[in-house]
Image 1: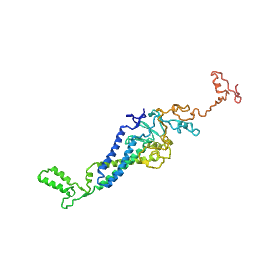
Image 2: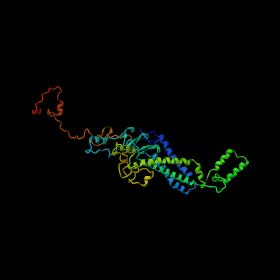
Image 3: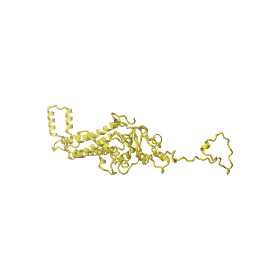
Image 4: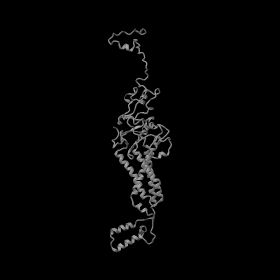
Length: 419
């Protein structure tokens, strides 16, 4: 059975009840995706919003909703069937009949032929489907396999992939903005008002109390050189105007968050620019590459201009449901048109075969028209052809003995019909 091995009926095979890619590389990638978002939300809430009403408002009203939408989109992109062609899928009726009279016999033969995937046990393969070697299935409008979402990107989950990239990019931008504002806020220090103090003691936190303790310990003779050096270094620490800034400068997690946010912001921005073409053309990456090199025809283009195939709905214009990771819904009767096949749970789970008597051998033809070998024939038998030279019909010629004596051909102009 094609597809990857299942685990408790969960996997990507034809018999799996729940779609879920179990590829090891993909599992590691999606774990990193979840971990990065959770790490960023935790660090931002612990070190970037304390003591600032503006930062708290941005975190609650902007960052948390964006982070939630990113995680929601990631989960949907991971667990949604991307558009795998089920076993027993059949060609659309409107696509299985070729118009006669306007096409040559060779063109009609190509039109009647059924595309099949050998890696999927010769199952029917729609025009816009391509085989994914990771999931082991043919995916309609296959774009690529993304390890960050641990799934193939196709017709039914491309929307969630784009939303995950978009919301990840916006959360990274929000994190960078909050880190910069916190760094500016914590850049102010308080100077010691005593003018006779040394330059180092002007920036020491709780300088008066600590200096008194140091003097007492020095008088008692209990302060060794190591502790004295540590006290000296601590006395050089600046006193910040805002108390929460001391924790901001002492932790390294904010630095790690800044590096991660910058890296993923650049990465997702590049991916988002690439996906804009997919949104406009309603084509997967493989289809776009084939169109560029001239290997694809009109069968790879969008099926309608009435709506956007990636986001669904009833209009090609952007709507609120474009930005919410809800399942894609197409207008009535258009789901099978977008997918390029017909399928029902009652169909036999075997590769489709056209059993009509006028169909091509081994189910390779889906046309109701006669094959090229019988085209143009009539139901009423015609008169057998007559030999011009002898005047006998073809069957009569077959009855002539091979060793019959040959007669000299009559002179030109004196041919007579032999009785």
